[in-house]
Length: 344
Image (cartoon, rainbow, N blue to C red):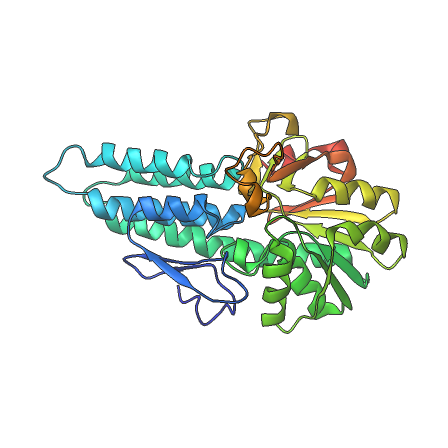
């Protein structure tokens, strides 16, 4: 799969023997690919947000399993499978909210269980297939979402749900890319504090494709909607419950409430692997809490100050605030009424 020539922006590159991960913490100032040949490195890259975005995390984990099998497999060692199982557990513990991580690890385990003889080639091919199919799914979602946007002229996105967060092309940005080709005139991107994925990643990524984007402060979203210029908000997701509740980057819930108030439509775009059919509602989704050091000024860290910080990475947007959920298997309109089990 020669993705290098197909994609201008890529977060992951498989060499055949190692995984190259674009360190997204350094963007847009520097483009740095770090190369990993073991699970410990891949898990650290996921945990530290070198790689981020639910689909990209799942793909990285799949390649991590392949690296583990390549490292541990030996016909003469009976315990190689237990070593791989330990590595899979390490990957599973790297991030708690993105269900794509668990989906990819489960898929890779099932492939591994079916292997006879030397499993290396089969497990490598399985990871490559997950990556390739994600790109195809993104392009399909782009077409479906753009059909729904229709003649609308102005969209806004939050965080980064583009090629940087997926195998390539993107979920929310995949829709925006396709809609832009069809004539959408203006794209707004929220800055997305505290990691500024919108300011550092989304506007940079769109610029690589020649798509102009206007950056807005998160706190300016309400006033933008009040102007009447905005038609759609288009976002990705890290986990979707069976009833259509969506976990996504912190601030998505705020945008959904504002959109309802101002009659702006709300679109969530994610592959079916992001849907967790084992949980009924967003109340069952674990919300990752990251270090307060990501928010606090350095002078407050590691001292006796009374100042602390609360730093949830995601929030839950209830289905009744969402106009449509778009997947590669189709779109669910008014998910509060229909849920998403029809996609199972």
